[in-house]
Length: 450
Ligand code: NCW
Image (tube, rainbow, N blue to C red; front, side, top):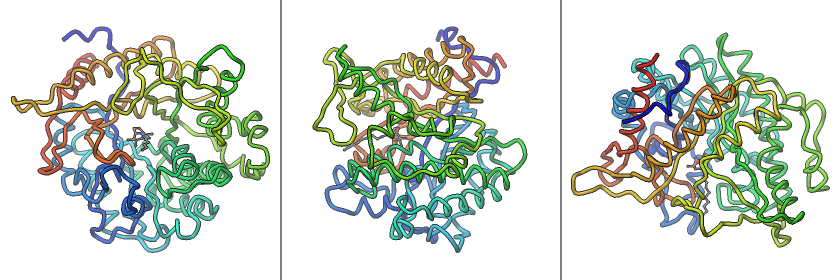
C-alpha cells in the first residue's frame, strides 16, 4: 500500500482510544462502587434497546489479550480512562485495593508491551455516591476529584506520563444536565452552566494536585471536543447562532483554561443564568497545562432557532453530504481547520488528536473478516488533514483513533460500532477489521522510518 502521503515526523505517535464505562464491564465486581452510568442505564427508556455497560467488551477480564492485539497492531500508545468508583467506591475516602490493582496491572501490561499509556481521569462515569450529594453541581465534587487525581498520580505516575482530567466536559454539562440524554439525566439550563464552571474548576484543582504529587517530566492536560462551526446561510442570525455554539461548546472551556476568563459574548448571552465566578477560581482554572487533547469528528453547520432555549440554534444537515452511522457529516478538513484555529487563537504547548473515527454498520463476512472500506477511507482522509497541520508547523504530537474496540455508545447502546477491532458481543470474540489492518500498516510504515 502507498503511504507516502501519510509520512509523519519520527516522534509523532499513533494510538487508539477507549473509555472505562464503554469497554470494561465488571460493573459489580471486586468492590467497585456504582457510577452514575450504572444507575442511568437501569432507568427504563434511557438507553436504546435497554442496553447497559454491565459487561460491555469485558475488558476488565480480557485486557491482557486485548493488549496482545494492540501489540500485534503496532500501536505506539493506548488511551484509556479510570473508572473513579472502581478505585473509590464512594468517590472519596476508602480505597478499593482491587480496583487500584486492576489499573496497576493494566499499566504494567501496556509498559511490558512497549505501549505508552495515556490516561483520562473522568470519562463521565462519576461515582453515584457523589451524585447523591449533588454531583458536579456541588463544588465539593471538584475537591474530591482533585483528591482522586492526586491519589492516582501518586500510584501510577512512575509509569504513566500523560494525564488528562476530563473528556469532553461539555457533554457532561449539556447532554447530562441540559438535554437530559446522558447521566444524570437532568434538564436545567442554569444547572448545566454551573456544572460547566464546576468541571472547569475541578480540572484546575486536579492539575494543581497532580503537579505536586506526580513525577517530574509528566504532562498534564484535558481533552475537549472542538469542531469548526459554520453558519447555515449568510444571514447575521445564522452567523450569530454559529458563534454561540462555538462559544458554549468550545470557548467556555478553552478560554478560562488558556486565557483565564470566560468569553464575554457568552456571559452576556446567558445573563443571570451564568454562574458566579471569582478571580481566585479563574486563576485555578487557568493553571498552566502541558497539552491539549482534542476530539474532532465532523463540522457543525448551525442555523438560528429561537425555539432552542439553551443556545438558540440547531444543526443543519445538508442533503448532499455523506454521513456516518452517527448521522455525523463526513468533512475531513475539520481536523485541519480546528488545529489551525487553536494554533492561531491560543497559546497551547502541545496538541494531540485524542479521538477521531467513524461508526458504520459492520458485518462479519462469510470469510470471517470485516470489510469496512468506508472506515478506512474516513481514517485515511482525516489523517491526511492531520499531516497537513503538521506540515504547517502546528505542534501536533499524535493521533488516536476512536476507537480500539467496538463498544457501548452511551445513549445509543451497542447499536453503533466505532472500533477498528470488531467485538462479537455474545462470544466476546475480537476480529481486527480491515480498517485496523490498514491502520497497523500505516503505523508500521511510519515506524520503519524512525
Ligand atoms: S460525543 C460522543 N462521542 C463518542 C463516544 O463514544 C466517546 O466516548 C466520546 O468521547 C465518540 O466520541 C465522543 N458521543 C455522543 C453522541 C451523542 C449521541 C446522542 C444520542 C441521543 C439518543
